[in-house]
Image (cartoon, rainbow, N blue to C red; front, side):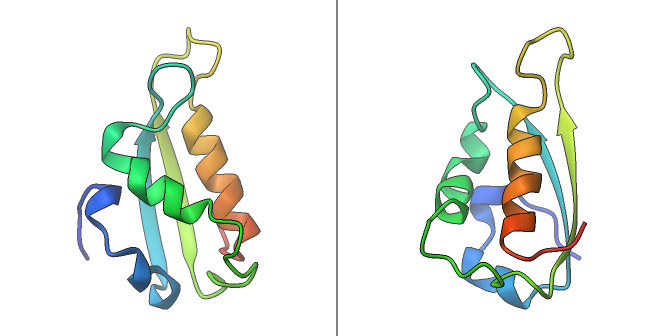
Length: 89
């Protein structure tokens, strides 16, 4: 097991992972935190195959203040994108 910011993770290793746990906080107006922006940008690439993460089981935990309109927005978007790429929650 390893623990690191999402931007420190070598994204090329993700298709071979079996399990991943993500903790994300939403900043500003529903945006990704600085420590996740490169990871998130790469994960959103349109040319990624829809089954590229089919070997991956994952969980996403969102942190933040539920008083904001876009509470946990980035965690919900990350969850949706991982599912689009074939990962299983």
